[in-house]
Image (tube, rainbow, N blue to C red; front, side, top):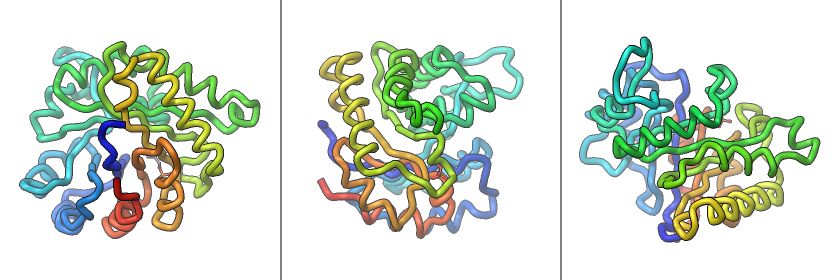
Length: 246
Ligand code: 13P
């Protein structure tokens, strides 16, 4: 990998109120300097967060975007609109969106193209269900998601989030994370050529201060996508502190 600094990203999902932003931003500014920190709050908090994090090293991201720049799409928000708030990243194809909003790989790819065109860094999520893992299909499922969700000129981040590990307190074994991240790297190189070497691969799913050091030290793990534990700044800071130094 060209950039060995780890990325610790917090996905707030549908949590967080305006009143919480100032204290959280103040706390997260004190993040250790050997990692990159990214906070992805709901759309409604982006503008306030951008102001609260100004002149800090903490980056800001959104959790979704529409594939087109503008138009008759009630309730949707474009990548350009996100970029205007100060966001630099956008999570795309999270399993909760694939499942709850019927997002196909093709839709995720279109969103990733839109994000890149708007100057945002897409974080494309992939991951298998528990049944798929039990059937021995996990790697094939993830390879398929990568093949059909990543545009040909993908420049961004991939997050491996086994669906059964999200919000459950369960995580895959170290061997399973290692195998899957190696599989993802191989697929990225096959799809993107040498450019695939520089793509960070995050692990997500029940990352906590107590397991972060182990997960983040595994080969080809370039950081974490943290849900529940990112809502408390001190937990995200503890996870960041446990990331290896490059
Ligand atoms: P948890 O960390 O709450 O398991 O969520 C993971 C996730 O979905 C991050 O995108």
